[in-house]
Image (cartoon, rainbow, N blue to C red; front, top):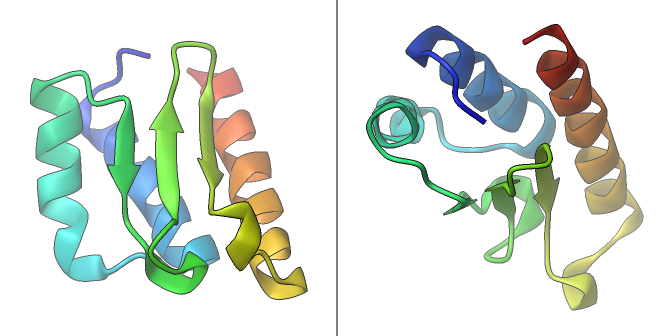
Length: 91
């Protein structure tokens, strides 16, 4: 998905708000996704070490290791993916 920096910033806001991604990594995330086509970004956050953002060409999504899933993490993933879908639909 080809997006401008402001839209990658919106993606990162979703990662911060829904999944506890570190605010300190925002600038690097935006620059990497603006300058290069990054398909996966491990951000961890409240999803643990396996927390990943993916841009697989068919849409944007978040997931974590299945063995690390808890009801709280599943809810975070679902919330983030809902918002990422809405953002993708407006692009």
